Image 1 (cartoon, helix red, strand yellow):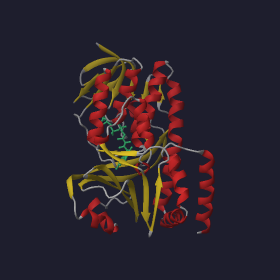
Image 2 (cartoon, helix red, strand yellow):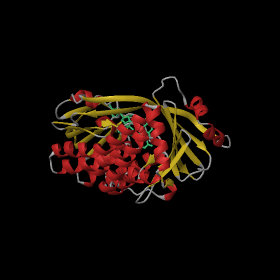
Image 3 (cartoon, rainbow, N blue to C red):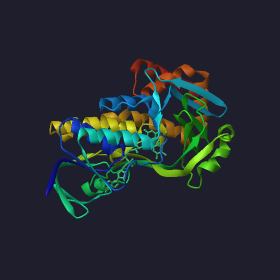
Image 4 (tube, protein in one colour):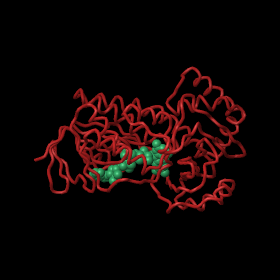
Length: 367
Ligand SMILES: Cc1cc2nc3c(=O)[nH]c(=O)nc-3n(C[C@H](O)[C@H](O)[C@H](O)COP(=O)(O)OP(=O)(O)OC[C@H]3O[C@@H](n4cnc5c(N)ncnc54)[C@H](O)[C@@H]3O)c2cc1C
């Protein structure tokens, strides 16, 4: 029977990041993924500054030619517009397939065994089956996305499910018109636009409405529709569920979960991949010490700020009144947006943030 220290089910961003991190700690890694690279997925394709930092800690440095930089986030809606700039560095819009190729190349260079076109079909305590072939492992990692089979098999499903929304993504061949990621707030939906190249943008729609699709949603955003008039769509829209779920536990005996399999925040935060990268580093650290419980603790810490931001942004999604007041307050006092963004982008300055939250809360109440 073949053996490996770490068997990873899933070759998306989380699985590949975990493969890189574990190899850098000297573990033997075998990764199994049913589809073939480069893997595409419905995604806003934005990497926040903290995601780029987390990638750098994995030894992955993106090149300027890999995508397009952005300097902050712009919120637009209810007649208001407000820009928040990142305090340290910037983010980067990168096509999902490009990011996948970069991560795959790093995982291969680090010496991980990557088995594309195969899936984990059953698990026992110390071995799994890849189709009919058994493989013995010390640890098994579920990186198999938000509907994780490994999570179910391991009995790690319990937790709080805070809802899901539909997400759609389409790329357009048009030069980016902004150096920010634009988030347009509309009725029960948001459209966010990420620059991903000198001649390409990515548009993602997030909505609670099951009947709404990207082309129909554009009627709520006539200024975006007008700009898109000069560009052409690339390929068909891709859809996926954006799930907000927190699990009670992400570790059981010698099995752990990472990425969306380990719970996820709503996609509006743009934090999904950053969480995966940070979790990968924490997991490898815990595995190298043979103390998986440390990963459980690190996982909770890593989730806490994105959880709070997701909660806040979903409040704006659910209530038009809250959304209008928040956007109008922020546009009147744009100096509060940057510290909020600092929390969002992993650059928290607690004192500034506390001041900004109090002032914003007060202006929301009195607006
Ligand atoms: C509309 C939308 C927009 C988003 N925008 C952003 C954004 O702008 N920025 C950001 O950071 N995040 C964004 N996200 C979140 C981000 O896409 C996810 O957090 C990220 O894909 C998680 O990666 P993952 O590897 O955990 O899961 P996935 O990317 O879903 O990969 C899981 C992999 O596991 C494989 N698999 C399934 N079953 C098995 C099995 N039995 N054995 C082996 N492999 C298996 C699947 O084939 C898949 O390749 C967005 C999400 C949505 C839905």
